[in-house]
Length: 379
Image (cartoon, rainbow, N blue to C red; front, top):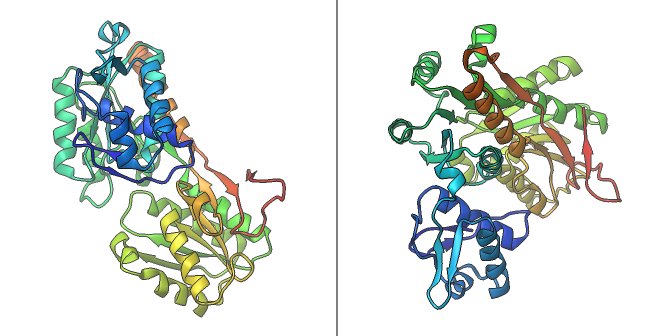
């Protein structure tokens, strides 16, 4: 669920315990300034009514925030955003973090960053630009004006005329910059950015290899176009096609087209090519393909094996989805660690360009689930 200062709520699917989901959503709102220091939070009864959660669940969420010293309870008055802890006020460093949003993919990334910075007495300034380039620059400028010592950025580097020039501009902000889930892959060794990224090329390659290992002679790919991740997934898929020697079957649609019912057309594409296995980017799209297959009388995984790329909502599909899972929490943690080294060592610190290969979480949709429970496929 996602909360706003006005108290509205909407549901967000999560694998975590309900009280932890609520506590994390409130924590993000506090960090982002949705509730400033001293502001009164919604009452436990109000949150229970708005979210449909029990009072016990809401109370446990508040207990988490009180224990983390983000919230204070005042008897007879309610719960309020606490003053920053002394360690943050005395912090030697402050780091700005720019994210395209704080939903789905990035909460676990942000958690990894925040935990690492907090453990080292470093304060965090968060800005989300909602994929709006104008807000992106504004957020960066505001963090710089607030006096941050470094920036961890997830900027827009796709769909623009000159990504290299944009990256160079970001690196000239006067403070160390670590890019997160963004790099200049087309430049090869000429890329001088410091970055921490998922190896999406390797993740897609491993998904194809997994399905091939289950006996499928070829694997199709359906993607959500015009995203920062899609080019790497396509590259990994095409490399696997080359290595395993089969004809590529690739189809893409934009997010808007998927929302408008592209799944039916995508399924027809698969049926035309007599596909028995498909990698789908991302979870929502894979779930839509699964539903379209059911309506067409196809069984998953018996008639069509599915692997999703993302693993945010994959376990909640009608047939739980085997999924490629980028290491989101660890990405955030390592990005923060790289930033801390850069701040402490300056130019003596070697340039970090880190890529973490996703894992494959095997569930029911590919036909290889271990009867003992969820298993992990490692390449």
